[in-house]
Length: 482
Image 1 (tube, rainbow, N blue to C red):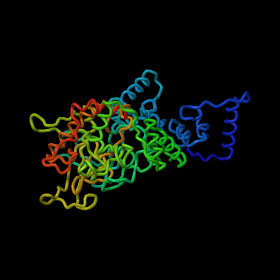
Image 2 (image 1 turned 90 degrees about the horizontal axis):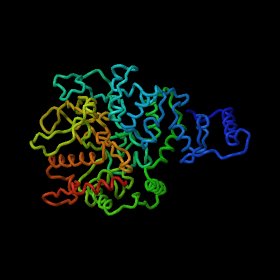
Image 3 (image 1 turned 30 degrees about the vertical axis):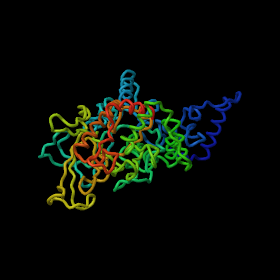
Image 4 (image 1 turned 135 degrees about the horizontal axis):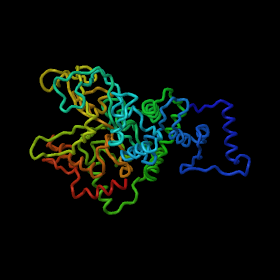
């Protein structure tokens, strides 16, 4: 939508607004305003005439017509549902599908591109399992030159005889993140930085691949709203203004204002009772190293810089917390860790990727020789390769990008179930149980436990970072107040 109107349209809008304000010639009255102070309008023309960027952005966010952009009938709000804390839960998707089937009234959430069977049936696709059961949308990304998909589909394990396909892009299924607190996310220019771009200090989207809210909106309009004409910069700026004004709580809004003004930073937490205060202590010990809640990262979106008190080990910007499918299984009996298995519908999203490590960028490490040289070809079976689909960088020669995703803020988390990038934890309790198993596996994989101690220099290492069963009620209480 081009917000630079010709003179005749500006005149028409002014007349329309004047008539609206005067009741069409009767007594003057004040136009009704919504909770954000925006005039209640029901036409795209009047919406575009809103006096503030926030209000124009809100109108654009909810506009299914997207006049002039050739969209598929979707508005931003169809996926980032305002009634669902600007995200999309499986329950909300199920409700909307049931309503559409019962009434026969089209719901633009259900477009073939987000059907499971789209790659087979195209415009005739109708299997919306990922949307209604898992709350996931299709994200299509080009394959890096050194990454190929194998022809074994979702089979686990993928047979050794499987061969690369001719596919040039990969489909991954990801949750719809809330736009709340967007002003405190994205690139922050602070350490720790990832060793590779794009956006080594954080970005937008679950994999951090986009650098501005405007670019993110443009990408979403193209890929999810099906626009064939790109939105004008002014429209994208207005969308960004609206998103930047949406917060999970008044405390986070005050924090954002203080950060923008370089003023002393207030604590965004609401008043806490004794149990919640104990939970905050547990959080700061067990969780805040990644979901920064201290020091230089009060937004809770970026990991805390390492090398300061209580954080003896380098933690990095992007992480793999083993939520992708399939998940590791301990071969020891009884198992030392035991992740909840993925459901059948989640496992249907698995593919096997073949990564070539040529010894030149992106890996830069010689391959095919003796240890510690890596093999020249690596196969990874996963439902989501994460940043590997951006960089093609394998595990060899560094931490790698396989299954690495950005670290989200946890503000307002109690109201944004389900959790993780693939919605595989339905409740906060399930989320914490996953982390219990994650910490157990870290200790199995690395008995020296540098990631599990807050007491550097103690021999043998003291494993005190993971939360205990006794601490779980307090931690849950604090998470529900964030």
